[in-house]
Image (cartoon, rainbow, N blue to C red; front, side):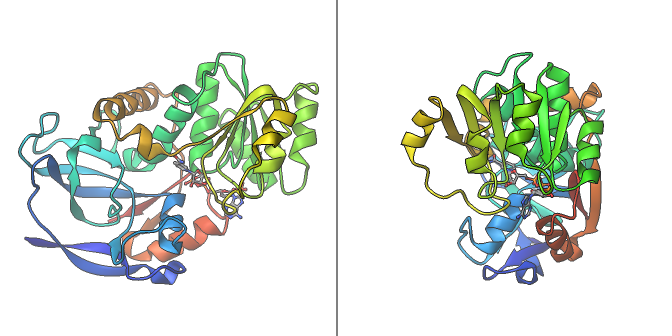
Length: 326
Ligand code: NDP
């Protein structure tokens, strides 16, 4: 048994609830591996888990994503061996640490072309983009997607992914600088939704037709208006709550606005199956290795400064992905 620096919460609260402690790390059991982390990723879900919007049994170690090296392999693990370079984005939380034991099924090998920092930055947000574009609703070349918070971590990857697939992406963002960044990353059109009404912006861009799909990680502030941006039979994918959770939806509204469809998705359903998870990771790393996706690491914080990282993320001060260095 060794000790590892680990970020833990004992109660829900603001960034000050995040505590640095030494936690024991044991040997992996059946179906598990022990990973020595190189870099940890920061994601908005970490904020929901810290605040209590997504409840955890407390005390709990925090963080959902990291890259590193396999140190020890438990019985029955076939796809990994000691010394492998790996990354993961999965339950249970506890990735903000130097080393840990993880269920192996969702731990994925990293190809040689991808460095640890890129892997830690892209894993959770990139797998999310993979399922949004390929596993949630059919999206064809030439379709138009409205993507909110397009200059964020998921957002900048989504802009590039859409470009690589020939999908037209209209991105919203909270400042002109963020809009410019989304455009540089492949958004075909951008709307500053703090200064301009995005519904009329989308109508103007699409010649009144609306978009095929909305991908909305912002939630409370954008959900209702986003329904007004869809074509008849359009698909609303709600996948986050950065501005707060979406209130209950009246299904009759969906009929009245044109037989709309709504999905509320989470990555953890998609990666729960081992084969699908590994397939998604290969697809993502192919995109990164080919240069189609260039990961923008907008911020780096030391592990012990994770509270500052949370403040920046919640304060809308970040762009692209954020990593925690060890
Ligand atoms: P981001 O880097 O996108 O940061 C969140 C962004 O949301 C902010 O930068 C800000 O951009 C925008 N935002 C709008 N309103 C608010 C608000 N009131 N407070 C804070 N931010 C606001 O984060 P991630 O890339 O980590 O995640 C993006 C979203 O996707 C999150 O909701 C996250 O939970 C969700 N997600 C969901 C997954 C799933 O499978 N369901 C998986 C991964 C992420 P701006 O200033 O431009 O408005």
